[in-house]
Image (cartoon, rainbow, N blue to C red; front, side, top):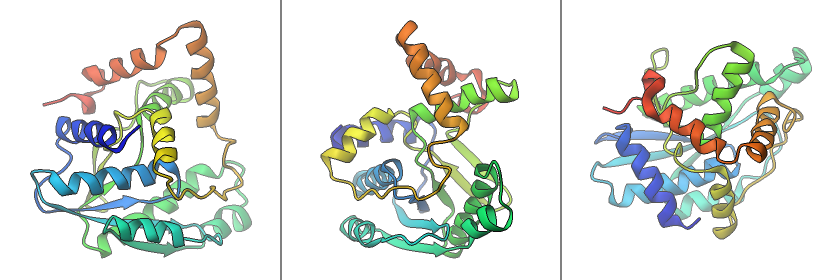
Length: 238
């Protein structure tokens, strides 16, 4: 995927769901993975020509691992986006003190809290997560299988506790295209140091979809069309 294609799909999502307004200050969550760095590229690109003026702040929540941010800092500087690294003890709390058997839920809650606090302190009224099209589909299946309900995350969500609106501009972008973008633009990705990485329900669901696609090719497109058709109220376009 080339930058122009990424910008086009992000622009369509932003327009379809009215994600950006004039004067917004948007916190971009940077995990160091391909998705979050592609999101940073997309929003920095949109900022140059989008009809509404908005500003960006990159925020990375460090869970307590020794991570070299120099390459990410260099990219942020090239894109003219300020990077803030938030130091936490989440790793110690989740794995050492609590010794969680299923650590992802608590880790996610603590990480999002630290991210939102940093976003508010930087004057942000919106935050952007890098969930892509495959994440949308996987979350739908996980909700059906493990919760018995038809649900996935919304393109836009207002978080009343933090008074921040969460947007997801990459919902029209396939994960495989992000992989291509990563290679084409040599994104400074660093490996997730979390010991639970790769051993989650989401990974199992990803493999399930891959297996289903062999017997029913095109299942990803059909599932996404079902979601985008508005069967879930928060996905209905105005």
